[in-house]
Image 1 (tube, rainbow, N blue to C red):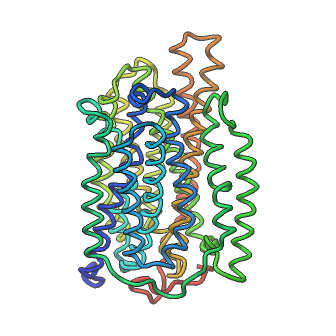
Image 2 (cartoon, rainbow, N blue to C red):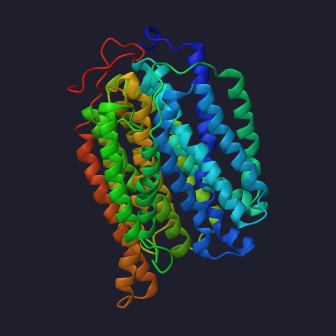
Image 3 (cartoon, helix red, strand yellow):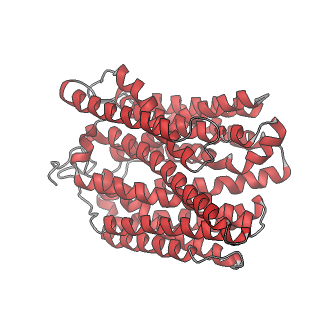
Length: 481
């Protein structure tokens, strides 16, 4: 089958360069989490202030990603790549040399701007260059970036912090980023295809309160709400701005060039896949936050031990993702996504029964099974969602998907942390502190299991709708398909 649909050497090269670069920038997204306590001590800032290193990164991502659909249509792959890796490398160098917290925060914003551009660029390039019959296999490789890099980040930073200064988190990444930048600059080429849309300034302005407000508001739900705006005002402003943004895009679809073309949602499989990925990301991000807290607070593991314990799951996803892509090309999404969502939900139910005395190996085994489920979910869902889109919606579909993943990740983290905190607080008056904390974790994992059950239902409706008469994805079926 594969021989009938060859991938050109040039296409392989472009995708390989983009995958390596994307792995580096996504790895960087979670590398900071373990370092926050160290940075509080060395930069003389409190917990609320240092948390902005993570929050500002997430906010920048949510605001910049919606503009990538426009960038990918207006500029060549090479230009967008150089912009993304140039920003990321500059931010990484600035972070490594930062004399204080303010400069470090600015560096994270610059890094996030480059990171935000890279994932839509990678997915759009796969859709444009890879024959539709081979996309599952290639998307399996892309899934390594999406799922494994965030899992390895905390492990890598834990090892670095055990022996070296926090600056080496950035000094380690910088040479790889620069090498990827120079290699891509020498190998990538090509001009933008099709029409050159104009940039709608009002849409760009609306992305800041719309996506930034929603993501910030969600990130505050799980906090103490004693400082800052709290969740209510940002969520209200974000909700109103988001409605205005959607209305503006609908108007531009009729009379001009939308910043995000929402006509991608007229393709049912894209809509189902987007909803499935959002629910999956809510559960995943919540567990990524909750499991390390459980291991450190209730089981007494240090950051390095926690990172090493979670590493096997990341490796399982990395080793399995390309194989899942080949299975997808052979059997389609349904058997894979149903199995994946069932495994994820089963693990989350099992985690809701953990106690402070549960053996650590149980957490390790459950995390490996969870990773197996995620590997079976991500590749088929990404591919089935993006496959039906026509060429002119590739960049918009990728940008929408990446934006909503950020929102879903923030929502999942906020929801599960809020449930954990509320349950722990409610049980504190009746139970010892440790038992109250266990009750909080169990409640949060049970809510995540509920999200997993919704994912099972959505997965049952997912099908692979292949574009007609398009061996490399040049055209697509009508939305009715």
